[in-house]
Amino acid sequence: MGGMSAAGAGRVPPPLADVEAALRASWDRDTSDDPVNWSSENAALGQCAVSALVIRALYGGEIVIATVLDRDGERTPDGHAWNVLPSGEEVDFSFDQFRNGEQLAPPIVTEPVIDGDPNRHKLLATRVAERLGVPIELD
Image (cartoon, rainbow, N blue to C red):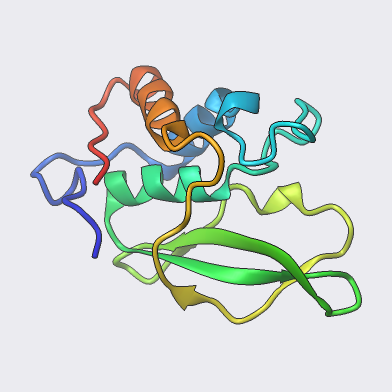
């Protein structure tokens, strides 16, 4: 499903902590799928799909998506995406966008839908690549 990762191309990907820092520094209203409600106080809001695509490009693995449940366990119209690396490690740098006791339904492996500007993930990848000094090739 995923494209060739940096590791798969013979390059060693940067440490996850560096990627997390680069993602967080690169998130902005124009990379969020909820630009109206995005703020620097909740910079992770709407960044899950685009971040998951960048992480997969660097490390490989799969993207999983789950329905967001409200604090009472009721389904919302929202989904949340994160990564499962080839090692089995789950990586979710944008979960902290949830601040009202939200939970996640069981995830499925699938491709995220990029709502709004279809180039948001490319914009984020460009910013992260510049910060890390590594190429990021998206599918």
